[in-house]
Image 1 (cartoon, rainbow, N blue to C red):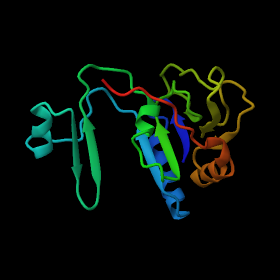
Image 2: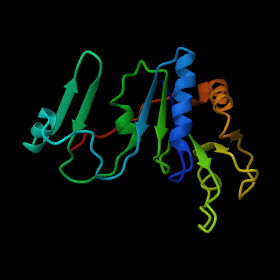
Image 3: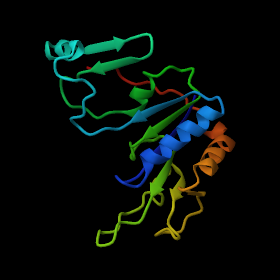
Amino acid sequence: MKVLGFAGYSGSGKTTLLEQLIALLRLRGLRVSVVKHAHHRFDIDHQGKDSWRHREAGAYEVVVASDRRMALMREYEQPHAIDPHELLAELDPRVDWVLVEGFKHSDLPKVEVWRPAAPGQPERPVHYGGDDHVVAVATDAAQLPRPTALPVLNLRDPEAVAQWMLEQGARFDYLPQAVEACE
């Protein structure tokens, strides 16, 4: 599997870009998975559902499955740092691409999605100058705040971003790391 992260500030366009890239890669017959960093208290379950009741009763993990989909919910007894490698280990290894949204401080190769701050807002610092894991910058800005030798991808041209990914594909082959089991 090939793994590529997309990191940037909230509202920079990461989710929209990933949505477009997923569709483009699928059109090429590729299987795509996504790992998404979420806010602290997110939930995919609903009060009153059987799976919610099992979690409320104290189940550590609940797997809900049908003939169309499967979801695994795991309750951590104590908050802990989420490692994207731990999440990648949960995925089907037969997937062609995994797009990782968020995890801006991870050691995964990533594209920094950058847009200038809205008028009246303080400028957000870029990471590409100090993060060796940033392999490209996707932006729709006419100019970046700092020069870079990295490829600059047009955020408004997802087809070109997908083409760049496919051309660079060999550099994104994922070698799983040993991760400690959750406690």
